[in-house]
Image 1 (cartoon, rainbow, N blue to C red):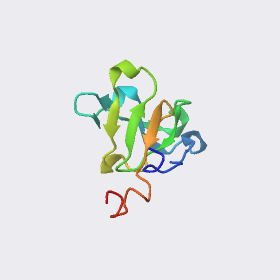
Image 2 (image 1 turned 90 degrees about the vertical axis):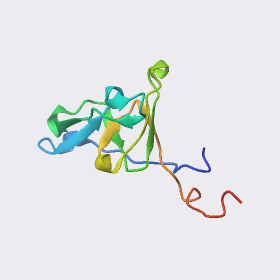
Image 3 (image 1 turned 60 degrees about the vertical axis):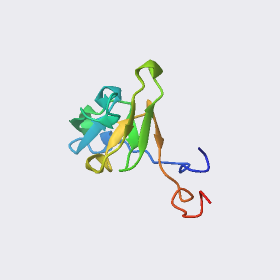
Image 4 (image 1 turned 180 degrees about the vertical axis):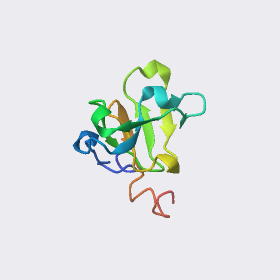
Length: 105
């Protein structure tokens, strides 16, 4: 995985913009059957949970590190690009080697 994924995916602190709005993805936001984000919430920065710290981009795969029995894994769609997920997720982002056309040769 280390050869395929970006090492760092970025963090953010929504509380620094108390009136700013963002979409928050937590474990309850993941449709475990379809493996996609389905029920994310729009929050103001002042209402951000302390775990709302991981920036996600379209194409990322989020994997819940809490309650693994739920199998909360999802592909982040373009509508959630630049938004925020819980620190309870591991964010897997394709790295530069993934895009290399000779990787599978």
